[in-house]
Image (cartoon, rainbow, N blue to C red; front, side, top):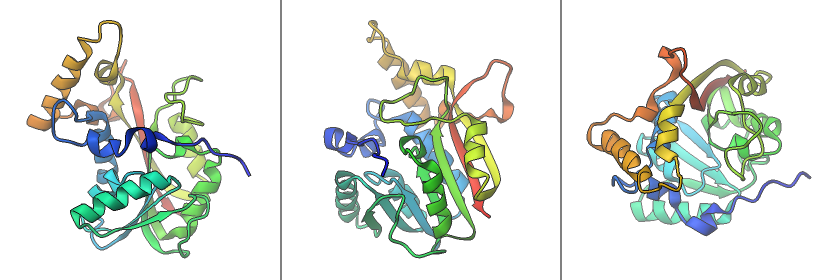
Length: 248
């Protein structure tokens, strides 16, 4: 059995995805919001559908999907993440089924879900092909899979918890054996992301740009990190991928 990287951010930081969703210019995370928004757009209408959030963590995205009328199931192998998700959903009186389990062996029946979501999960696993085959098993005929993951840039990983990152062609290749009608969207312009997250010895200047971006997103409903590659200019680069695919 290949040992997975231990994801202990919930022990260290608590329900940090919920903190990043707070509507405050000082706490809001426009990067996370853009990532969630692309996933929700790709899911489209989920009212009355069974949606599986694989690697749901503290349930911040799970809640956004549940709000749209889905019959939601959240699965994670982090005991702390599942505990946080259950507590928050109970407080908000939002129904959901949270399961502590490995994503390689989910305790659900074949052909039992309409849509599956992998929100920045695939880069953390050592056996992505095995994970994708397990999701295929669970999806109904022509069921939809939505994946988000950071865009790979060379051999240097974005995060110490990542095992592997993907170029668009690599992500497509990993899906082709089990899924069809694959579409990959590039989003989060690199320049905006650099300015939004950049830290240096002149750290006093970095929050100003972050707050400015948050003001655009919260007050003017313009999140520049939502920009995608459909109108790519010559030197445009993007740092996030969202893939949509359907079960073969």
